[in-house]
Length: 331
Image (cartoon, rainbow, N blue to C red):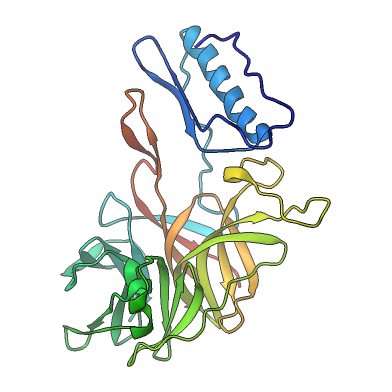
């Protein structure tokens, strides 16, 4: 790549015509890579990063030093790092019966909620991809990614030690869209989040209520995963960014959250389970894909950030070692 190269971008171009960027060294080292579409401003941010890294490479300096990472998952409250049962993406967490349960692929792990130590493991009696976990004193509930397409919610009876008949929502069987993200249980009623919104699900019949969209005034909300209850609030993990309006009052897209004035933030969201209104949120320093909560304490698993190494092989950039974060917040 010629460092003196400057792309000529027409002033009238609102969306970049360059869908991907790959900068390699003489030995095909990965110096910088980015893909997607973006408006001219955000795209030029990526181009400037590429050129700056190429300068370092050409000077024989380290060009891929990662940006500083916050030391803790949250700037408020008290946090603690617990060991995870697997050095891999964790699919679900829930606090039930005084213990912490963790879902990873085809296994459930019973963990000490203070240390993360594994007390026992349990094989899953299902073949689907499960994306979240809920529980109470009697049952563990596993949500399949394909619940929105009719796949059954698994139900494990903790007292009897058996898997019971899956909970099926017949109305979903006509859909082919996979989009389930989070599940919680309260007083025998399930709350499920998906691309549709939040729905109440009858744990006996599987009948689902009309979806309610989670709403945070002045912000866009991207996804809602890892549902649980903390006091009266339904809580979940999501990404948020401020809304910006153009002269006509229409939202201006923020391609990949690259606008420095309104970055895309990870957060714990406290939600009214009936209306979907976000009552309060707490910003997190790391993206989270699942959480459990009880009495102001949260256990969270990080959504791994993936990338490429110098040999252009896919790698996990963060976290270096998978952990469960225990965070105590004031309500």
